[in-house]
Image 1: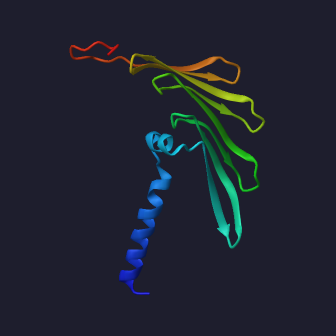
Image 2: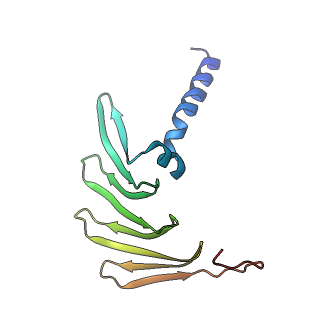
Image 3: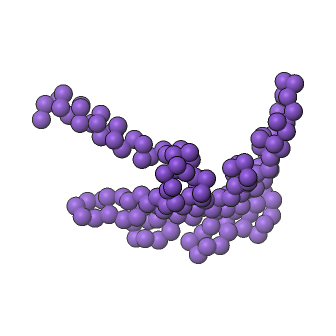
Length: 141
């Protein structure tokens, strides 16, 4: 195969596969996608489920499970959203489904005002607050 043909083939494969990696919420919603599986191919006829992503009706990622090659759970995360589709919680679970940490996001209108992280016992372990300088606009707009 000529080098020019190889370059064309690489460019074509990138063009074809590119959209599968970073689908926007709008695209996922318009296509009605509810789940996405990512498979890792490790050799001839050998593959394993690397991750499973679940989406709500608005295209928001609500659950992701990452797997090891032996099918054990590597990472499990849940998200919730408010009516503006802003992320309100992010919960990390262990392999048995118990909460490892929970992050809670608060908003004033469209702007995030705080991020609080809690440990597995529900104890606050870190907290960030956000302040904004507005140019003659209300935070509620």
